[in-house]
Every structure is written in structure tokens, then in C-alpha cells.
Length: 167
Image (cartoon, rainbow, N blue to C red; front, side, top):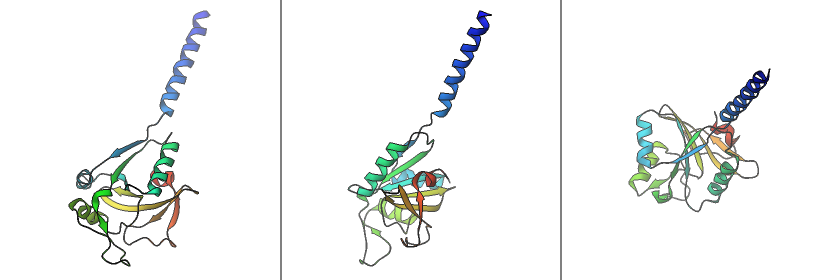
């Protein structure tokens, strides 16, 4: 009788250990270069790319929100820093950017309507499918937009950051 009780206790302990191991999921952010992003496109990979730059308060807020709430989200987000891509507009009213750097030009070939940071792009099988742009710190949302034109903030849909990332 005593060995049955010990067996049940051991089984219960192992079950708890397995359940806690299964419930722990790891969120990963992987910093990538534009060259690595190009390779991912060439390999027709599916991934999410967070585009940011230095001195971007919305980027900092988004990163802090992700850091604070990443527990339980088992996914990988690739992070591209565009600080040195030297983006500019030819004219103030332009809806597209230009770049004087090779990396920036390659980036704009893939993402021609990129204007704002942070932006999270969803790429499926090497094709850009959608973008979540900006970060509303109060609502913890971003503005979802197609990738066929520059964002129209009045028409964009608000989407929860984690719901967008976990699609």
C-alpha cells in the first residue's frame, strides 16, 4: 500500500513538472541585417519583421510593452534597425522615402511605402502581406494597413500588438 502512495505522489510530481514545462514558452527577438532579411525573402521564409530606429519614442514604448508582456508568447520577431539607412523625402509632401545608402535602397525595394517606425511587417512565403504601424501606448495597439500604399491613418484598423503578432 505504501509503494502505491509513493507511486501516485511521484506520478503527480512528474505530471506537474511536465505541465509547467509545456506552459513555458519563449518569445525571441533576433536582430538582423538587411542582408539577412534579403536572404529570408530569397528562401521564401515566413516571419515578422519589426522595423525601428534610434531616438524613436514609439519604438521604445513598443519594446517596453513587448518586454513586459512577452511571457506566454511563443514566437520569434526579427528586428531591423534602420537608423543608418538615411531615409528622407524628396519633397515634404511626398508619400514615399528615398535613401542614400545601399541598405536603405534595398529595404525600400522590399517595403516601398515604409514611412514610420515602429512598423511590424508580416511576411509569408517571402511575400509582404501586411503591416502594423506606430504604437498607441494607451491602447497597446498599432495601426494595420495593407502594403500597397502609404498608410491612411483615418482608414487604418487598430489592432492589438499580440493579436497581430500571433496571426
